[in-house]
Length: 153
Image (cartoon, rainbow, N blue to C red):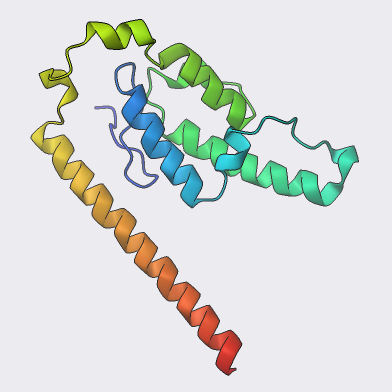
């Protein structure tokens, strides 16, 4: 049986029917990991000749974002980005292929049962919220500890 949840922050895997939901969740994850800027960048990535430090930082963050995007794709959607080496290009390819057009949105009734989360999805959403909240609390604890060390030691 194929997995339906990514190991990254328990995100539901991308399929051909959940792009809008998936993209919002992955965007929040990438924002939390401080790599969303790479995905929405409008400039070319740095080259090694532009400066080794800037290039290495970009390469590391690109790999982090790309790994998250790849890991959150299901078996049926991963082939869309297979072989792409930049997070922005992968994100854009998925959006181009899977993002519903405005005309598709008009055809769907707004109160469709398909758009309402099932009981199991609601449970996953609650667990995901609890997990995310717990991660934020742990990060806050770490920041307070670092602040304490810098002030009193």
